[in-house]
Amino acid sequence: MELNNVKDADVLIIGAGPAGLTLAIDLARRGVAARIVERGERLFPGSRGKGLQPRTQEVFDDLGVMAAVRAAGGPYPPMMGWEDGRRLGAFEMIVRTGPTPGTPYHDIWMLPQWRTAEILYARLRELGGEVEFGAACTGLTQDADGVTARLSYADGSTGSVRAAYAVAADGGRSTVRKALGIAMAGETVDPHPLLVADVTLTGLDRDHWHVWQHAKGGVLALCPLAGTGLFQAVAQYEDEGAEGAVPDPDPEAVRRLIVDRTHLAESEVGEVRWASPFRARAAMAERFRQGRVFLVGDAAHIHSPAGGQGLNTSVQDAYNLGWKLGAVLRGSADPVLLDSYEEERMPVAAGVLGISTRIHRAKAEGDADSQEPRRTAEVHQLGLTYRGGALAVDRRQNATALRAGDRAPDAPCALPDGTPFHLFDAFRGPHVTVLALGGAEPPAPERASVRTYRVGGPAPDLLDPDGHLRAGYGDQGVFVIRPDGYVGCVADRADEVTGYLTTLGT
Image 1 (cartoon, rainbow, N blue to C red):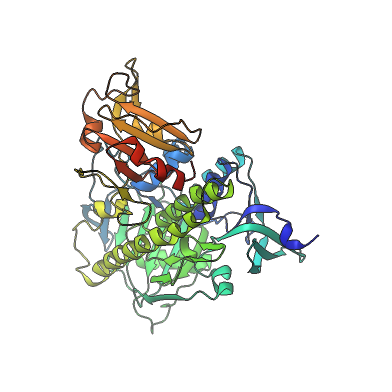
Image 2: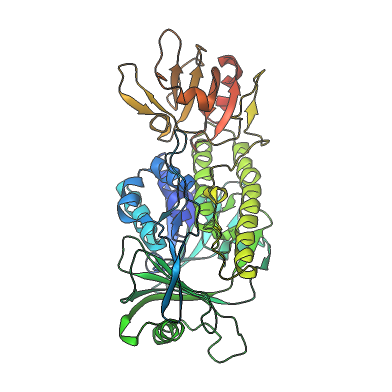
């Protein structure tokens, strides 16, 4: 039997970080046979990306992990400046906001990356999925029918996997991206190297994110990692020609660094669980797709950690791609639907890279003692839009503020018997949602992959007693909400969205 007639999986996912795990979860709940391989012997062990933005929290709500995320993490603490062993006073690095009817998740939530990965992995296993650890992708080829990937295992053996599609979620040094010959263009955001580490400490309270702005050799920050007994240390190295100016991840060197730059005694600096040096870069792949292979996460774009955008953008790459792969693989959507992944995500990644780079440089070039908040609602990723794309279709005569391509907001409402209900309850799951407002009739016939709700009219499915739904969506119209929570098509009549539903594979 010819190899290209054999498929071990519908989708091969290379890399089990947050992006790869998110995609695997989304595909598993759609009944897609995905195989996920990971070069490492276990999940990534460090904190690195520790902030989940509101939009990512909405994604995790849909994927069924938000309760675990809330239980395991916590809010960001205020900053506390230090100098010569004395406190300089507390200040805020972020602008804190309250919830609104449309945004139930309103502030960044702290959860170390290793714990995020653990929660996602547990959810994947609940859905029957598994990760193959110690399996590195060493190359791949593709043809008109699928992709063949070569694997190298930790025990020295080799093998291959055949899949209809492959997704590279294997990080900034992506083997797959290099094998495809896709260039990564970018720049160094900051010439000074940094080191990040997870450590145990005593002698500091856990109610503040402690920072030594004028420490000899460079800034040092120690942030208590919510839900753990650890602190994340981030150190900048300013004097590259001086002794000790090169980041050293050796545990003893990390302990010495903390003692040298703070007032803490050696006895107060404990175990170093993980450490890694890096340089802040901003870079993006010249394309996010080549044939049957897609790039997600750091394989497609690399961010400065400032602004907490990298992990979050990675998760949302996967969330954008998952439902499209599912629709194409079950044969209900034309493969042209997959073209929209690159079309939608490349502009978003470019914009987010600009935000994180600007924040990083503002902090590096500004007044070191400035207590101006650096992270406003622009980092929450709730305002990201796909307006103007092929899947953003607006056919109304009179458009409201909410346009096709925008994130679909939540709204507290009620079922006909008065039971409280949220629009996010309607959206949750792998389906398409249709809202028919102001007496408009929903499209017919009913589809198994579409859930329809009449809002208002003689036989409503949802009531809007406080007007929150009308405030977010307007008084009338038919709204098609994509499986990833974005408004796809808006029209005045049901017959105007029928063709669009076919495009989505419903």
